[in-house]
Length: 186
Image (cartoon, rainbow, N blue to C red; front, side, top):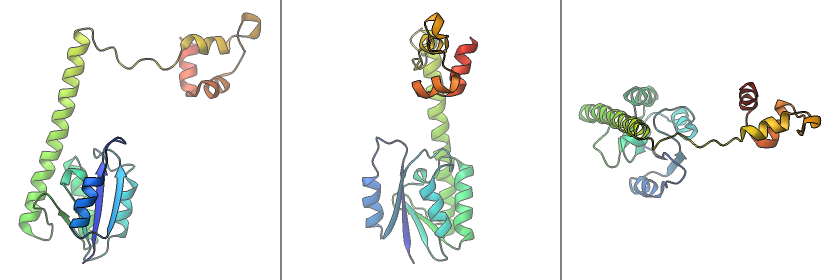
């Protein structure tokens, strides 16, 4: 019964080393790693690769269920794909084993808690932003585009500019054309 490990962290400044060590200790010979948000399965190419190549009898192993999914809907979809292949799911730090009834029940509970944790974190973040805005502390992200520079580059040479079009301005400043059009329209 081949055991395939999957390690995931959310940001590029995080490291999968602890997860990889735990997966190796759990008998995983193949381990796929990625740095991507767990709030969606979109863009998680390593997970997709594992799910594509699972065979009957294989076991996908993760350290914790939140490394696999942060929403009950995504978790259910992933588990359906695993089971459709005749494979199983196991966790090194939680008593999850989809080949048993108790393991399936525990998996469902952990999925609900993972989604709840994500929602609570999002609510706290929004509350903190609202409070900071009310206190005049939060002003949003600092502008990365100098509107005056965009206008100067667009002005004709006779008026002290360079007479560039939106595409050339966007290339020169490393920004999107839509941003150039938005600023020129203001």
